[in-house]
Image (cartoon, rainbow, N blue to C red; front, top):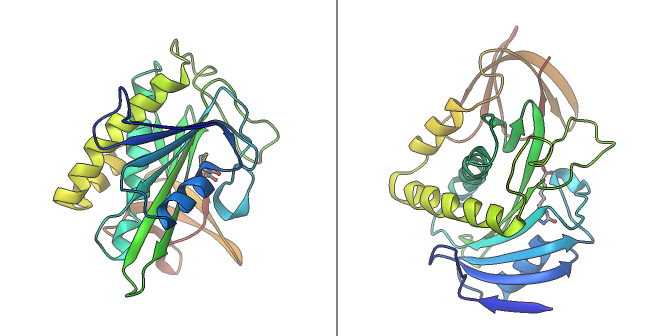
Length: 251
Ligand code: BTN
């Protein structure tokens, strides 16, 4: 069942499309984007049957957690627009932070951690138009509210496990959406600098040892910084390396 509303309770930026169930909210949003849906269209499903994570992984999506995908049409080059994933990570961290006793941390590129365990995932997909300009971005966000997945190669947690009193997915969506709207406006007006500052302020493992796993191997070093283009800077025995895609692990 699909229902489109003027986003009751959400900032005016959003047009909410609510679904009971779908394959992937990212796929629903991509289809809407291709057929001309406006920036701010937000697809929210109570469950997904084909939830997708980064690098083709499965995102297990039972009812009780948050699954949403937002259509954005920023008029900027694709590389700059990709920085929206950091905006989203900060917005998720802010939303989570308001609901739990502890302070969430951010793990490059855009995981949100609580007590070192992943509570949220972000999947950004985009399509360029005829002139090579970005046509749309779909920003998919999953937050573990009631359930945490098991059997993963990394630690996972949920708002429930982290001691949140509020487990209403609609409330979590509202908090995330409000934070995102504010941070996205800041990003559009001021660029990446304030986003980068907020991200570094909450970064997990900054200054410490890090292992970076790439498509074709891995290396170790010290996590030096997030650079002004969203790259990860790692000091190694062979000098400074800049990483634009990969998974990171901390000892
Ligand atoms: C990751 O691998 O960490 C990213 C996970 C992204 C999951 C969200 S849930 C809503 C949206 N729909 C999907 O199929 N994936 C994203």
